[in-house]
Length: 120
Image (tube, rainbow, N blue to C red; front, side, top):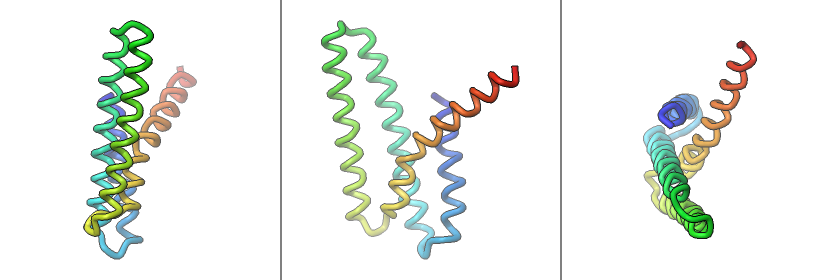
């Protein structure tokens, strides 16, 4: 999980630096990107905790718990996007890209692990 988080931050920094060349207000861009990335890290942590907890439950309870946690994470994501859309000092595009850093990091992790297995 630490590797995923480090990759998320790395991707966010890289995208942030590249984005600085294309945006008119750099502070708003960076705040949006940081807002989305921080929430992505929180979402990853919530996912980790809910998986660990559901593994200790009976199957039916685990299924209900996992579904409720899934919905909670999506509701929180909607709230974050809503706040970013209403707050003029936070870039909505930066927030959306920050939210996608988890996916980018997961894909990057899969690619590097596959490449490492092929090198062996």
